[in-house]
Amino acid sequence: MSSPFKRGDFFCTVNPKKVVGKSIAVVQKYRTIGMLSKATHSGVFLDENTVFESQWRVEQNNVWDSYEGVDFLAGRWKGMTDEKFDKAWEELKKLEGKFYPAPRLVMFLLTPMLTQLISPMKYIGLGFFSPIICSEVAGLSQKLCGFPVFDEYMGMMPARVANIIRRDKDVEIIHPKAPLRRLK
Image (cartoon, rainbow, N blue to C red; front, side, top):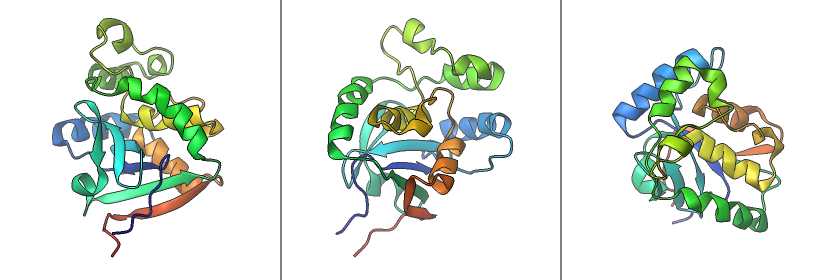
């Protein structure tokens, strides 16, 4: 089986966890006016089949097991290299195993400016919670690799990540928004 994905690619899809996905959809509806997108989840590829994402925990999952048949949009920054991603992974892997910071969703809705300045889970989560949500994980991965569009990844919602994949001149669309299918 051939996979079109490479390390460092980033993606958007519909969150497979119904409660979290619906919560994100509600928050995103009010936070991203004018950026209509059904995407409620984002992540980054570690290799051609493995994604790094924040669901109930920040974890690695097989893209095909998790998203086959689900609308899936993936892009690749044209400046991505293995060396850049290796450096970024050294920072990203510190998040692995931490719980999803659900209280940040309330912050996104009630105090959107604060989400771009602070992450209280870093301080009140006692180290058990990730300080950032799924789309911020995708954004941080790209920022650490040097993609300047993601310099301000804090407060970023999946709709914004989808918008970058679709419209940024430095992003190649690897998988257009369509149900994910294995290539034979």
